[in-house]
Amino acid sequence: MKYLCESIDAINGRATGLWQTGNIAYNVVRCMIGTTTKEILIKTKIPFSSGRHMPVIHIVGYAYGLQSPIEIKIGYYIYNNTHGWCGAVSMGAWRPVIKLFSYVENSVKYTGIALIGGIYFPQFSVNVQIELGTTATDKNGWEIEYLDNSSSTSTIVPTTDVVVVPYKPTFSATINGVAFNGVDGIALTPSNIGAAPTSHNHTKAQITDFPSSMPASDVPAWAKASTKPSYAWSEIGSKPTTFTPASHTHDDRYYTESEVDAKITGASGNTVTVSTTAPTSPRKGDIWI
Image (cartoon, rainbow, N blue to C red; front, side, top):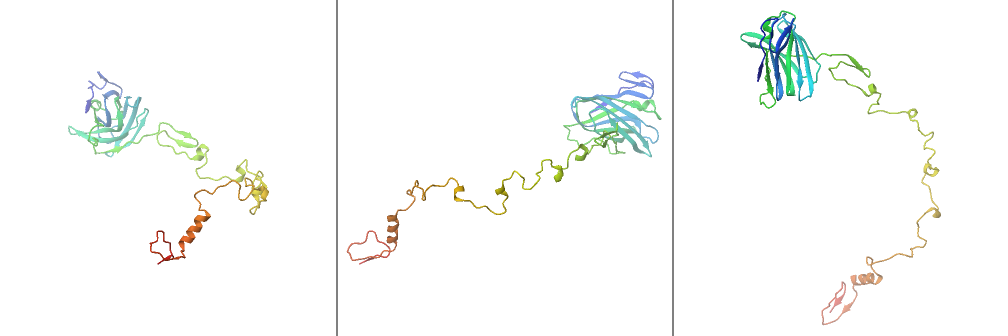
């Protein structure tokens, strides 16, 4: 998808939507993208030429998905046919990966800017300041292309003369003794915030309620004995008054004396019987004739 800029009549002229004051041209291209984008390309008409330009590209707008303004400034200089000496600052809620690249159109090589990172429903305009080697054509014909999130295409960023633009700090501060530049992450240690490390020890002097002796004085003497104590009969509680206790039972889980005797006798039979009738309850050891 492409957005085209509006034309400007002359270097100091003004057309609908685009105007210029000195070397600053406003609204050279603008867009409103009603979807989630993966990549946005800004194809400038600033020639890719060593030692000619030191432009500052100013992107300013609003992102509905972020519910916040977005504002990014990008500056660079081309030397020895290389995009370099570049940097970016973000004053809004969006900090996409920024890449510079080159592309060719009508046999002229230009610089392009890639903004890489998902953003929903952004609208913004682009201003440019060129102090060195500027011409009227540098501000005309800019285009914006984008790759939306639903596309199966992995990237639309060209691969020629590509360089990643680093974000530069907008301020310098110190947080609990650690330098913070507003861009890079900050690593705070426990000592920076007055906390103890996860693994640590305490000395006896650091414990305010440490006992003066060990075992502590509130431990009874019998618990400090070096050997197991012995107890008098009177010191044992909850014991029965008679043995066996008067109240107890032997239920049907136990054999009676007669049942035990029968099993013993039955197990070792010791009789000899002469009879014409077969035994009905023979026992081991009995003899029948």
